[in-house]
Image (cartoon, rainbow, N blue to C red; front, side, top):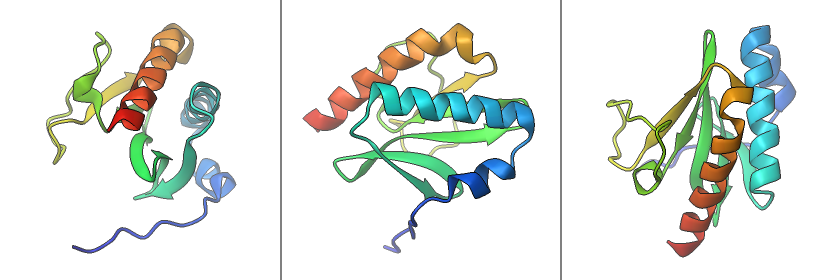
Length: 123
């Protein structure tokens, strides 16, 4: 199996490519992940900001025009009305939260991040 190449992130380069609205959401999500799960490691993988725990992907940020998705690798193990299946993922475990209004979802996202991190440590 081919290994996906990871590199030390150049977040400024990535953020400079985003529209202002995308950039604001992504920066808010980055700050939330770092605050909720400070032991996570941030890398760029497949063009997305990806956060690893125990050397495994646990959450990543995908960005689109007008919104961003917070993608949980083990999202099927989480419970929230915000979580959705995109239907295009190779893994049945992946779930996403689409964020258009960060402040509206911030508290639930923080809860989900902490729960996802605890599950990552268990597995």
